[in-house]
Length: 150
Image 1 (tube, rainbow, N blue to C red):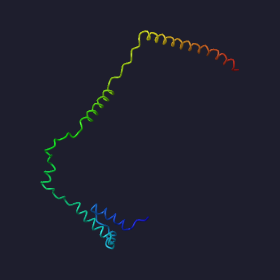
Image 2: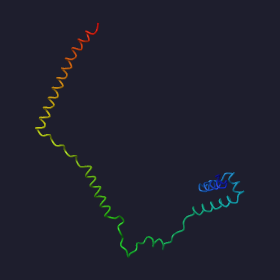
Image 3: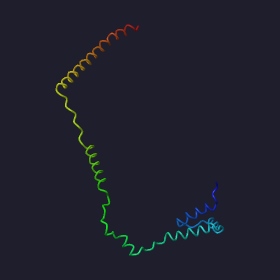
Image 4: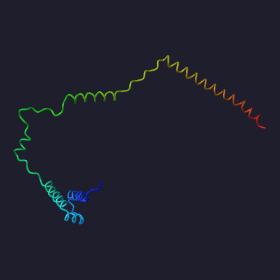
């Protein structure tokens, strides 16, 4: 559905009036020829003048009544104490939990330590034997390689 040309002009009138800018010549010509846009432009200018005018004074009596605290009721605390103290306790518990030292790993008992050392020595011996076996396998391969070549 196509917009009414006056709707488009009224949007321009509103934006230019809000920004305090003058109307272009084409818009002034349209406003002069259209009663609806003339009334809209007049309303925008009047409302802009009312909005920019200073507000009237409230008066000293109203100001004193607003600022005075009723004397028959005691002042209540602004923040509820129970939820705040519960939140503080939760935060303190979380801070303690995340900043506590990590538990120490238990020391290896001497008997298990000697077993681990024996296992390490045995693994080193197996590695050495495996290396020697590979060396012995390399000798026949070199002999076979020399026989296979003419």
